[in-house]
Length: 353
Ligand SMILES: Cc1cc2nc3c(=O)[nH]c(=O)nc-3n(C[C@H](O)[C@H](O)[C@H](O)COP(=O)(O)O)c2cc1C
Image (tube, rainbow, N blue to C red):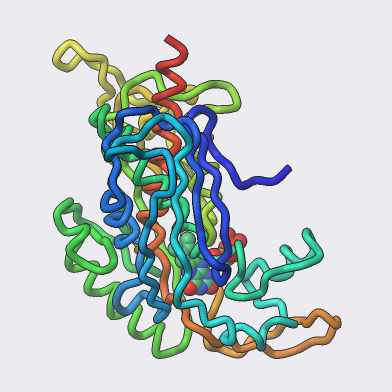
C-alpha cells in the first residue's frame, strides 16, 4: 500500500519530488468557515527555509499557491489543494551520483523497492518533500488554535552541547531555534567547526503541545503518543522519538516515575509530568512532551566508501548544496506533523461525542 497519506478525518496526502516540477498537498476533511490565506501558509514555509551556518545554499522561493477549497478567504469544506513550484532545482549537481548509492541516503532502498529512482536530490526521500507537510501543518494549526492549543518546538542539543535554560522568546531569535542564548552561541561555533571539516552533525528537539484537552487519542492502535510518534518518525532524518521521561523512565522506580494527582482550581492535575501528558494513549490535559533525535545529514564533502549499480566498490564524495545540521529546519516540520495529528484527533473526539 502506498504511504503518502496521514490522518483519518483531517486527511493529508502529499506529492512531489525534490527536483520535479512542484511539491503539493491535498487536505480532505478540513472543516468549513476557517479563515485561510496564502500568507498563513507562507509564514510557515519561511520558517522551514535554510538559514545561516546550518543551512544549504539551495535557495528556493517556496511560494505557496492555494488551488482549491478556499472561497472569499474561508475554507469551504471541500478538498484543499496547495502547490509550491520548484525553481532552483539544479539537477546537474546530482548526475555524478546517478549510478552510486550515497551512504546514509535512501538511494539503495528506493531502488530495491521500486526498481527505479529519481536520483535528483533524493527524489521523494528529500527533505524538500516536507514543504508539503508544512503547508498542511499551517492549515491544521488554524484548527488547533481555535481550541487554544499551541505547539512549541526548540533545539535542546546539537552534538554534545546541551541547552540548560528555557526562554521562550529566544527560540525564534537565533537561527538554531534554541531557547538558551548562551548554548546557541556554543552550538554555532561547533557548527562552523563541523562545516570547516566538510562534515555534518545531529541533535535533539523538544516538542511541547500546550492546551490540549484531556481525552484525545484512540486506544488501542491510535493512541495519541503512538500517532504523534509515527507522524514525527516519518520525517526524513528523524531517528528517535520519546514521550515524557521516555528512555529515562526505564531507570526510575514507580515512586519516582508516577505523576501524583492533585486538585488545582477544581481541575484534576498531575504534580509532575513524566508521562508527557499521555496516559493509556489518551491526553490527560497536561503538556504533551516529546523528544526527537535527528541524525547528522548524510550528505558530506568527505570521501566515503560505497557501491555502484554495477556492483563495483567505489569512493563517493557528495557534491551539491547541503545542510551541516538540519535540526533547526526539522522543527517547523515536527510542529506541522504534530498539528496535523492533534487537528485530526480533535475532529475524531468531536465525532465521538
Ligand atoms: C527539512 C529537511 C532537510 C533535510 N536536508 C538534508 C540535507 O541537506 N542533506 C542530507 O543529507 N539530508 C537531509 N535531510 C534528511 C534526509 O532527507 C534523510 O536523512 C534521508 O532521506 C534518509 O532518510 P532517513 O534518515 O529517515 O533514513 C533533510 C530532512 C529534512 C526533514
